[in-house]
Image 1 (cartoon, rainbow, N blue to C red):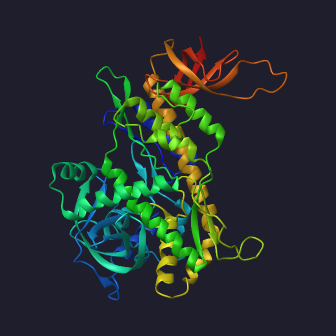
Image 2 (cartoon, rainbow, N blue to C red; image 1 turned 90 degrees about the horizontal axis):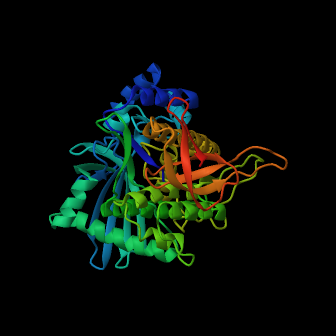
Image 3 (cartoon, rainbow, N blue to C red; image 1 turned 60 degrees about the vertical axis):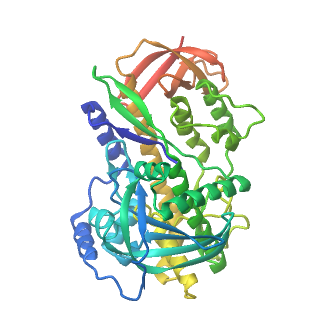
Length: 491
């Protein structure tokens, strides 16, 4: 599920830092790893890599990630096949380091996923693994799950192979570095072909009826006068092309799981019409034209994240991805009967069956998905430790996802409160995008949500007869960082 990416500038208030720390404690996000977990991780990091792997250190893999990233899950190489493309995607092989049912493994199940905050992250794995021995750092020999995917000249899948390998990344590129090289015509052939494949896969996605949401990073910066402002970092084309490689791999992984009769799909229902209607009102608030005959997917293709209003809309569009989950099959369910694969397990946004296998350093479920695919490709049975854990994985990931989503929502509340502190009493132009239902006989002001265009804030509003979908004037009544609360009154 796409998420809003918030980042605090170096300069920040103590109130914001305190509010984020309190929020982590309230949600039970672990501050640090227990000593015995760290000790086991240190031992695991020293393990010798088994020599029964394919040696693919001859391939010039590169990683492409945000600046400063060290938890590198994926390295990519694209070559021409003469009449199409060969995509090789090396994924960090976390199973080479983590022993099932160990102290470390239990801690990973407790965490479920890495949770990103505007100031720091709460990692899934100890750094000695996630930013060390298991990370696909450049110039280092690393165990990997290597996906080799053949595509025809139109970008359609023609072949799939997956096996354990030993790889060595050649470079750690940022998105900016990769885009600059592509724009200047100095990119190596593999990177240029990645751009070609990315464009082709975007075309195939549109034909399937799928949509990709490129959510721009939002930075909370502090002005010289001590007040806060929101700024957006525009997404680059290479980010979308690189994401298509991950989506491609997740699609072929789901296909292998269906063949195997055992697996775990990433699922997402179609967007709730009420959320679409709310998003249409948000578009109006931000001054974005969205004709009634224009679909959501068509609208997304007209937006540019470098434009603040468009960037704000893309952040709000994450609300359409509610209801994402996992469906495990090929194992006994709660009633003891074997759970079968869904008849139609298509992911609502991707418009294809899809599985998470490309981010095992940051998501627990990916390690299990990779093992299922490796076993099936090799003609072996799925390992027992995978089958034993599979029935509980949807609940584990749902809980960790709920915690991460709650943290994300409250982080937005914190930074918007920080942005508006000191502006109490000011009046703003807004649009009412949602109104709570009022019980019969209740005598209280209506409550709802408004979206401001400048600054791009969504917050609660109170007032009599809130006009849903209409432009209004609202007065800032409260902005409290510690309570993570912003409230407007209808003027």
